[in-house]
Image (cartoon, rainbow, N blue to C red; front, side, top):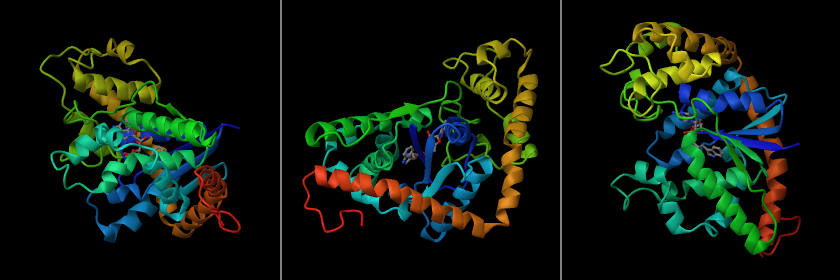
Length: 333
Ligand code: TYM
């Protein structure tokens, strides 16, 4: 059976972009593939963060993933730092990737900004840790939003280079990006993607926002000075984003849906309603999960054990392939 792996950083406040770009596919994939999903807490150390909150957010993120529909009886859900093979394989891959290709990553340039001399080295090597996350599980498919495409390309290059130099060790994985809503845009600044770290919370719909809040955010969404509802992401990014959200929620086509709306008001009303309906089951399930912390902890403990059972042998194979002297019992004992 083909294997799937994907991950999310533990912000706790998961948003509609995460849901439509990634989680919805994860939930579908878990029934079709051997699926591994990971809360990537080590990745969260690459930018400023609050150590007093990280552990809590990690748990909340896992809880939210269960709320959106991950089912531990059919998939493996775990925390990255609970599986020590991740940073160990990262080193081997850092010695395979090049400084030049890491420096050229768009996310490094964006997040590092003008401060390239003082950003943490971990921000530069971030995509290599991500490659290790994927390659350890010999994953064939990686369901992600559009913003992760470049990191997936790097993963593929690194895997192919390692295989070429040391013999067939890794599967070269494929990114799975949804057809609609692969890049959900901020409702207030529709030329930038919706993200956890924007200045205006009004532009970000959270997976756990109640319907009134979704309605408020959608009604205040920035459109343009025209009145015509038309799908045209270049000239009408705000309206096109709303049409994509509607299409992703109801299954239609954004350009075709546009013709049903005489004005922005009617479109916004339907988008708000469709989103509230889409996210309702997750919100309801989260209330139940809040009362079951022990259950979430036990899912993660079991997930880590299952993850290590796959990651350990891959690490061992890769270390031996790279020519390292194996200790008695192998590298993953
Ligand atoms: P992260 O935590 O930023 O986002 C998690 C997933 O949500 C998708 N996403 C979006 N999709 C559509 N529109 C948006 N506005 C939007 N914002 C986020 C992301 O594409 C992602 O799929 N580096 C990764 C985490 C990671 C990972 C991995 C992913 C670490 N290791 C291994 C896959 C495989 C990240 O920061 O995602």
